[in-house]
Length: 230
Ligand code: SF4
Image (cartoon, rainbow, N blue to C red; front, side, top):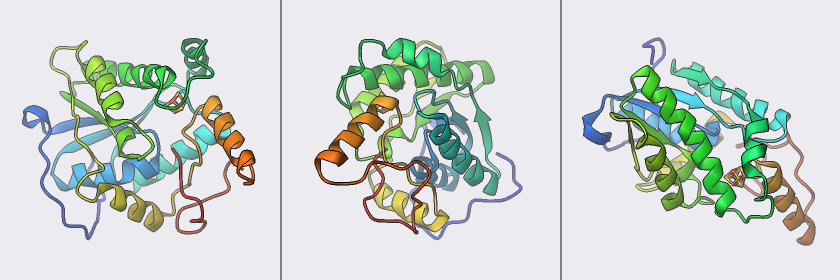
């Protein structure tokens, strides 16, 4: 992190300690809304952090670019280093083969978390980060135990790299995530990310008399009806 522009927040927070008292963390981020609270919480604890954006699951490219640009905007605002990793979506589709009809939180999602954390752990190993973590679990739509299992499995491949299983939802984290998203008017994604979650979300909407998702349409603090579903 540079010291160019500090994160400013009025929120009172406890001091968090990463595993083994590490002073440096590589934070895997999927989007700005999920990472905003986590970034501010880590920063408030005096821990150095770098954002690692590796999300080849996000489809289509327009949605991927929107989510990434919002995350870059927030990282730049606070002088936090942002690593823009590959969009190797072909590899993601290869790994998802045969799991097209898996429900959310099922085997396809385990593969998806594994793939993203494997790359995050490799980067941590190659660049001297003792701890990795992720903002994915802050979403109420995700299974925390599933995410932690994938993170720990990825980190275990490298000696000296640990996965921080902190529950970012607790202690008001979920509410602050929403508060920060509104304050920053982040882009509001309305499905988890992959083509299959977009299909399933739209099927549910049609069944419930709601219009299909329009990519690039909604922003927190501007269009709050419905809420995000990433
Ligand atoms: S539903 Fe979400 S976590 Fe599951 S495979 Fe799709 S993008 Fe990945």
